[in-house]
Image (cartoon, rainbow, N blue to C red; front, side, top):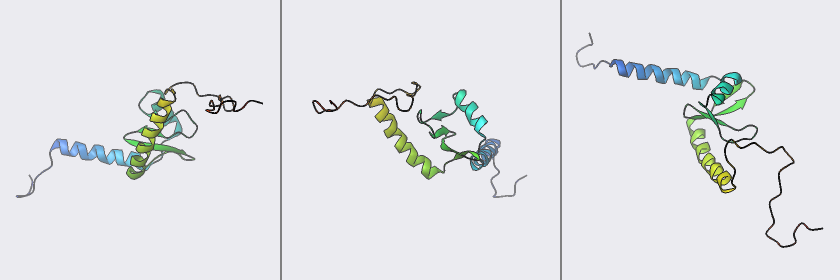
Length: 122
C-alpha cells in the first residue's frame, strides 16, 4: 500500500518506463551489422539513400556504421540529419531519382547536359 500523499504509478506508467529504459539501453550500445541488415531487409529500418555509408533511420533515430557496428546518433544530430534528409530527398526527387532505383556503377554516370550551346564539343 502506498504511503499517504504519495501517488502510486499505474501499471501503464510502469510499462512505459520499462519500454523507455529498454529503448535507451538499445540506443546506447552498437547494433551488430547483421541485425541492421535484417531490419533493412524486413523494412523496419530505412536507408537515407543508395550510397555507401548512407545513414539508416530506425527507432526514431539515425544510425551510422562504425567498426563496432551501427551506432545511434544523439537527438541533436538526428534532428540535424532529418533536415539534411529532407533536402536530399527533395533534390533526388527533382532529378527524377527514386528510392529503390538501382545505383549507377561508379564512372558510368551520364554527364549533365550543359546549358551552353556547343559546350563539350571537340
